[in-house]
Image 1 (cartoon, helix red, strand yellow):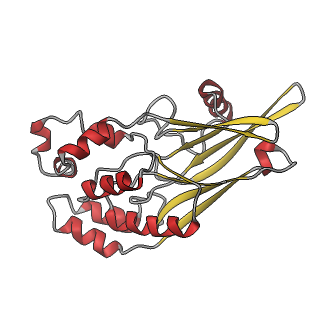
Image 2 (image 1 turned 135 degrees about the vertical axis):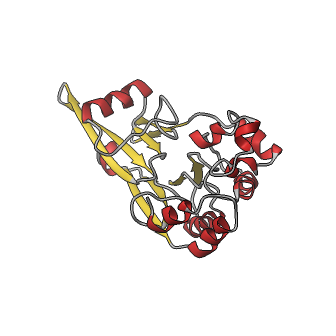
Length: 246
């Protein structure tokens, strides 16, 4: 099975349209969005409506949740809040109905493994699960969440980390997958990115050989994206952040 996972579009329509082109080429079996459709850019409604048109299951990121918390006074301020003030009423309603997580269970090789998709962490859409997190603390998160594979975004820095523990001579593997960012990378590479999660049935170890994670990076017309910011009330510092990916 081929599953597409992406996150943190942040209203960057030129990047999102290119991502969808790349995704369509891969002919996936399923597509999931891990949140943050809005913020930092001028195309929130277009991004939201493309998600809805394609019926892509989506969870709420911290920026999506922020929309319902902003006051009228805050929305009227220039600066970064402009990105939220232009969201339409129907689009706001959609954001307020997004779930906090998605679970998918697979029975494979006579075993069951559980995928949990969140935006930040199982506890909060604002918590960062960084690659250098203490291993024992990370494993505890998997146990408490009841997950074998944990997929998330939020930090905009993609990675795949395999953790393991051995109890009574039996080794259990856990996969932590940060899917990166479609529209606002922060790893020094301005290319957009998403993940292809491959699930195979084989006679090997379920948690090692049955799971493959492929990171896709793609170019898009970043000038088209930065010009839209330059022609808007958004701060020009966002242009540099896109160009230098921080």
